[in-house]
Image (cartoon, rainbow, N blue to C red; front, side):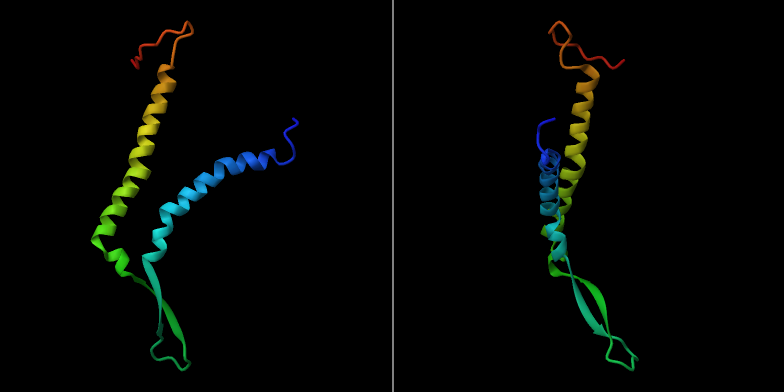
Length: 108
């Protein structure tokens, strides 16, 4: 193979970078849903604090919640299911017969 020493890295980047970018783009709003509050520890001899996670107003917004839940349902549920059904029927039926004629799909 004369593709060079970095051919594997280029192929991996070609497939992994779009997945990484889409993953970050889909989940970037999750970082704005909570915030950290440091509260003092009661009955503490030292000046100690304890971190607590609190829900932000952004997360409590009903418009955001409805939009985000529908967005995730469509992108993680509906689209992959439809693609699975489509590609499985393409594998099960085959695109064309060996003679070039379209096949009639029959699963039974």
